[in-house]
Length: 190
Image (tube, rainbow, N blue to C red; front, top):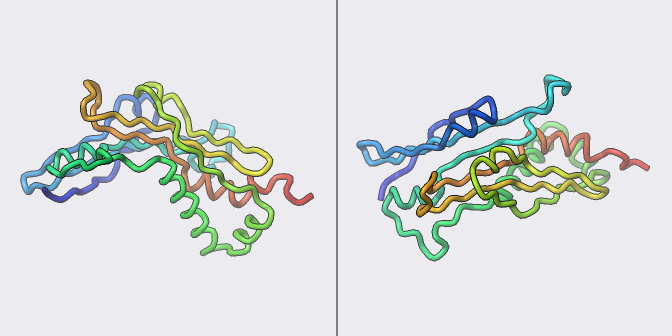
C-alpha cells in the first residue's frame, strides 16, 4: 500500500514536445508514489484573437492500473479501468456552467432557452501514441448540439511500449464557456 501525490503537470508547448514527453511515476523513500502528468493546451490558428482559449487539453497520464501495481493494490474485476475521457469532458462543461452562473446567470438562462446543447460522445480509441498525438478533440456542431468526442489511448501493463498509460484529448473549460456564451447561440433567435 501507500499514498499517492500528483505533481504539477509537465506543460509542453508543441505537438512535437507532446510526442516526446511522457507521464512519469516515482516511489519516494517515504513510500509515496509521485505521479507527474503531461499537458498541452493548443490555441487556434494564429489569425484568432489573442484572448482565444485552448480548444483542447491533451493529457498524458499514468494509468490507474499502473498506480495500483506500484502501490500493491489488487486490480479487481475491472482491471482498474481508467474513467473515460468523456467523463472529464462532462466536468469541463459543468465547470464552465458554474463559472458562468457565478458571474452572469442571465447567460446561463439564455443558453438554456436559445443555445444548442453539448452532446458528449464515447471516446474514440487511438491505436498508438503517434496517432493520438496527431488526432484532435472532436468538436462537431450541428443544428441542435455540438458533438464532443475525446481521442483516448489506454496502454495495458503488458504492452512492450509505454505500458500503463492513459491519454486523453479533453474539452478545455474555456472552449466550453465560449460555446455556451456565443457559438451555440448562432442562428438561434429566428
